[in-house]
Amino acid sequence: MMTRGATRMTRTVLGHMGPRYFSTAIFRNDAGTGVMSSAAGFMHGVPANPSEKAVVTWVRHFPVMGSRSASSMALNDKQHDKKAENGSAAATGGGDGGDEKSVVSYWGVQPSKVTKEDGTEWKWNCFRPWETYKADLSIDLTKHHAPTTFLDKFAYWTVKSLRYPTDIFFQRRYGCRAMMLETVAAVPGMVGGMLLHCKSLRRFEQSGGWIKTLLEEAENERMHLMTFMEVAKPNWYERALVFAVQGVFFNAYFVTYLLSPKLAHRIVGYLEEEAIHSYTEFLKELDKGNIENVPAPAIAIDYWRLPKDSTLRDVVLVVRADEAHHRDVNHFASDIHYQGQQLKDSPAPIGYH
Image (tube, rainbow, N blue to C red; front, side):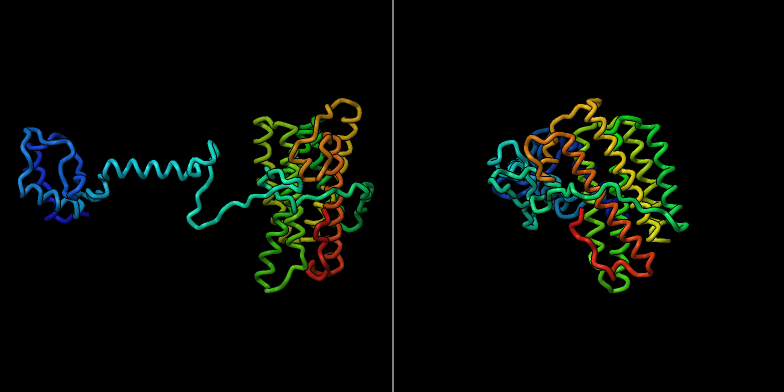
């Protein structure tokens, strides 16, 4: 805010200099002297007298009407152009990388350059070679946890009730069905890992590796989604449905895990059993020829270390095996709670996809 004195002085300056100058001229440094001069020239071609130069100097050092100082507003044109050129060169990595842009880090953080075993460039930023693996296809797909207690039956019929609207909406469109399934399946591991992480911090205790296991599960499910995004292109209403379902499911599972972790893990165990069933039906449709067995996406080949000539059927096989492993992990976690123990008391199956 200006004082009254500053306001009166501003009016005096404008009243004295207004008739002499042409509109709103900016001020800039003269190239060798550093003295401020008018950029637009004078209306009558009369140079500024010493008193006017003093006023200009005052304006330079003392901002008027809350604006920036004249020195910061009016950069020298050459300096401004030079900075623009330097900024453009920095954005493009100095021009050596052609059209490829790179981020210049003030903090010295540089992205790592990773190559494959054969020396070729690794093109995925969402995962690295040491995070890849070969799926265990020998896992028993028929295993089922028979519900006996009230919570088990509640979890089982809750999951069964969620299957009916899914069947009605997607019907035989198993590509989009898998995409929707993975947007939901990637939530429980993240929620459970987050809550265990906070619990470990509050109680100053280790987690037995379960934080890493659950976050690993969430990341694996997310990679399933990244894979099926290359196969099934979702429509706008399917994307909208993802927002709605994820918003409801995340909060519902969050509250459920706070109230009863054994119920939460049991629900996920039954969800994974339904996922196995869905991918089995997916495979049947592929074998019948109702769904085209297209080549496997490149991201799936690298993530599961599949042969170069793999197809969509091979991808569904490894994804189904992952879901079976997640089924076992969550039923195992629920059993630990049912036996009156904490997860930290039993070593977590890290790496058991």
